[in-house]
Picture 1: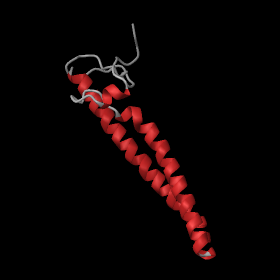
Picture 2 (picture 1 turned 90 degrees about the vertical axis):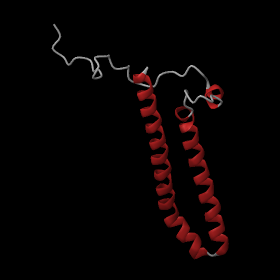
Picture 3 (picture 1 turned 30 degrees about the vertical axis):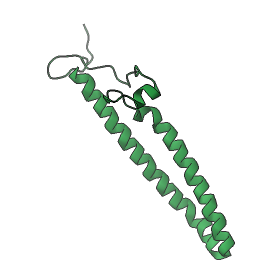
Picture 4 (picture 1 turned 180 degrees about the vertical axis):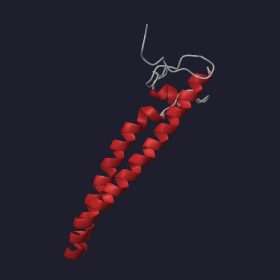
Length: 116
């Protein structure tokens, strides 16, 4: 006799799918060129996009910092002090946007699995 909670199920009595991302039957290029849109590319590329965004923000900050110091020492110090705050705000915005896209994709995958 089990005293724990029963496994979750949907309203029709079907057991819930196991948690986690289901492995994609296709690879990256297979999902990229899937014209029926049954395989999602977003979970595969979100980490790469985040790393590229961090690198681009860092390089952009350095370029902006050098340009500010070549123009004037005061503006260079201004960018040096306040620039990291803007950098963190942009990084947070990028992170939240990518998490939003990933959450929508995961919800779509979950709904698609439950309808099968």
